[in-house]
Length: 342
Image (cartoon, rainbow, N blue to C red; front, side, top):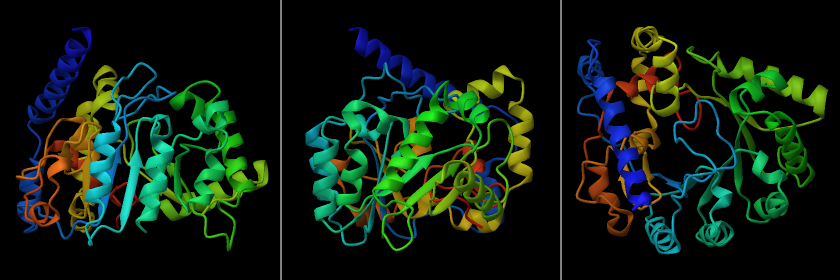
């Protein structure tokens, strides 16, 4: 009964956040798209399957849009994982992107990654790094290397104070240890074929800086201070949902931040938003246009609403569900799970 009540509370919270975003007097995102002849927004193709393996995490990060943490019980079960394997066989899908929470904490994680690798798809795992320093997960870096997994890791700064402030005390030190271990097995090393990418997101109500310049800073500092190498840095804008929306409202910065996103709207970025080639799968198998719509419980506008009924052709014809939070993906250079867009 308590579990059911908790899930109902989460649904109510998502509905409240949608209402909060829509109750302001700002220019509607859909109207912005109409002005550049991009409405209704539709997919270009179904190329990436992004799968949330659960909201369980060993961290409680300040701006986590998933609201993940050690107390979350939502975990994708093996039956749904098997359905994801079947869906990934669609010929247009070339990449499977695994998220959480900490995806490694799903009890069937190793099995699922190995099976997905056998399909010949590119497998991305979004790791928080610190999980790799715990005894139960010390084998994961070598497991990643054996399965040619692309590792994408959150690293909001190359300084201890900024990282620990956003992600918790001790996170920076553990993250450095994990990156060094990944380097030891070949990740981030030229010619290894093992890709290690880092992710930056601002610590407050601001847009990220220019991606390529910041990447150079990261590479220089991490190499000089810790002898760490990596391939790419992605910059991601904080979207006004979940914990970050709570932060904006608490600090009375919501209106200023939304105005900043709206004023920074970039038509080029709007053309390239990730929802146009990606389908997001929730821990329970429900389908969404993106990871952010998933957290707001805004399901796809398609007859194919669950991974067990996955139909790539049907999903490619859908209209993408939009909201005011979408401004976060189109501001400045744009933002996606693969970094800036323009």
